[in-house]
Length: 384
Image (tube, rainbow, N blue to C red; front, side, top):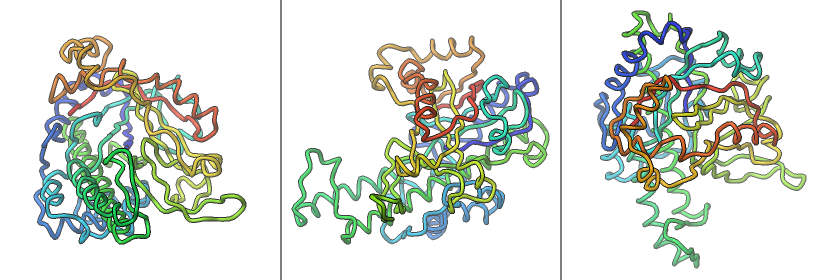
């Protein structure tokens, strides 16, 4: 997830909303198999795998401050491109700067004054103006990460026999973390994470270009600053106090996201006082939230919180109950302009297919594992 501010208000954006969304739709390719504008060589793609966002910034697709506002400064150190298959490289090399499909989206949102729950924290994150327009991106490593996972599921199937491991489903195939296979996968997974960070960085570069084109001002003039970029579905080695002593553990955040509290050494100086920004998506009809992490999360949930509102029905069921074309019209009548690659794909992401985001966030806030800062309401959406 990635959140970008602007200094535009909804009053300024509303007359040009269709133009903004249409321009974003043309600028950021979406949908299954979509390819990006970047044409890079295999050696360059291996640099992306190992350097992450730094590669994008060094090559003109970002600002230095973007690094500071990305989880892990946009890079996982132990990435090793030699652990990634040629097939995965072939699938991923043309996908930088693309949105993909499923529940991935690019959304124009508004921070209404009534939805700001903590003005001090909102201001620290760059949300300073009533009715301020922001942009949220949800996407990952595309087919590249999927192929890395597929490759290692096969490797783990063979490894489990040697290590005497059995699982009820091949999707749960695994290997001991300290084994050669486990370490190889860990390094390949880091490559997929670095590609995902870089993909979102390149997408943000294109978003800045699109807004500059529509509003005839530079991204710097529009103050299109990155609030934060945080990963989902990733494993990391971190240290936590367990039974009175510090231990190094593998934290696997599947269906969750990082939520470090104030003072954590991994955070930049900008967020030392308030904690790490946490971006949680709801549905394209109901909106999303910006929160911050807490020390309680570090003490009780290994520095983790929810990553989204979660589905209440399968994609297949959503498509049976909703027509994409009708949903698009209904959303437009509510003031949300949606541009989608596929109408069935749009139907899959109908609001009724998801839990109530407000209830989910209130639960996290009451539990103390993340603190709500501002609710963000959608006005424009690009959907794969």
